[in-house]
Length: 245
Image 1 (spheres, rainbow, N blue to C red):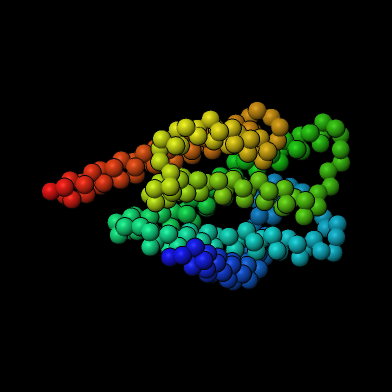
Image 2: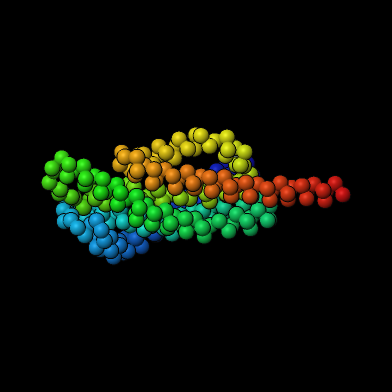
């Protein structure tokens, strides 16, 4: 296909994703209320009184919940659209192999949400409360500030849990290989540690609890990439032998 047709195809896929995201946002608005009440009945929200400092706070919270809920069905659909975009450039067995990654995009996102909400967010929140108590500050929490703080930690980490799948997919379509990933290891470690420092309180324990799982995810990605690459090399060698014969 010419370049303009490729761009047109990419635009069509992006439009599909945006339509699904819009529909998911509408559904997220209906699911926002039970999700909000569930989170406010769990620690640490159930130990405090949340206040509204603006008339728009309630509407803003509904929209934040709708966006987070809308991402859950949109991510696997976006992964499918990406697969459909590169499908014509793949061999038949590569098409079948990469199609299997799509359900795992949802699974990894949900695992990332659970890890960041159950492990990282309580650490960050308790650290900030500890600092406030050390300064003898009276704690008055706004609903927007509380959930914005939570989502700013939960969403980036959940998206980073897609890293192994992304690297496996790029390896399967021969964009990446384990040799390149090993050369990029130092840079990758630096970026992942920087992310761990940014999304957590400035203490070594919290930073480590985020950075170490991210580094392990990267090493898992390298390992899975190496497995896929070996299969590719073996398949290419078999094809060359058959062609030579």
